[in-house]
Image (cartoon, rainbow, N blue to C red):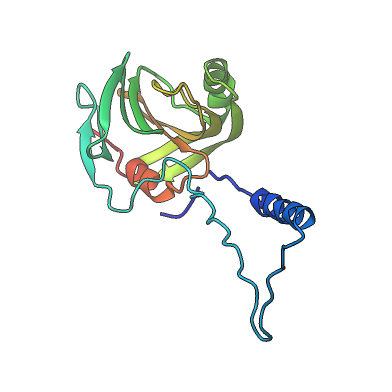
Length: 209
C-alpha cells in the first residue's frame, strides 16, 4: 500500500561536538590539530535515517475479504477476514487497530437523499464526534445499487492502553430498499492511510436480499 505520520531530527550533536573540540584546543598547549593528506577529506558524520512516515491503518494488499450477512438476512457485505468483531447496539463492527467497518440496518420508509442526510444524519454525527469536519455529501453508485455517501473527518475513540486518539477519514454509505429500510455501511481509517481499494471492495460487495 502507499502512504502515511512522521517525525524529524536535526544536527545538535554535531554543533555540540564542534564546541567541545574548540574548548580542548584553547586549554592545552600540546594540542596539535589533525592534518589530512592532499586529496583526502575529513570523515563525515552519518545522519540518522528518518523515521517511518506511514500512518497506522494501511490495509495490506494481501487482506482477504469474506461475506457477512446482517441479522435477519436483509443484506450481505464482504468484510476483512480476521478482524475483531464487536456488537454496538444494533450495529456490528469489525475492527483492526484504527480501521473499522460498521454495519447497521435501520427501519425507514423513504429513501435517503443528499438533503435528508445533510439535514438529519450529519448534525447527529457531529454531536457525537470530536473534531468533526464534513468533507462532502453526495449520491454514489455501487455494484449493489445507489447510496448516499457522507464523507467526513473526526477523532478516533481513545486507545484503551495509551488513551491516544488519532484523526480518522470516515465514509458513511446509506443504501435503501423499499420494505427493507436502510443499510448503513461506515468505513473509517487513519487520515492519510491508503485504503481506497479495500473500501471499494467492501462497498461494491453490498447486496440486498
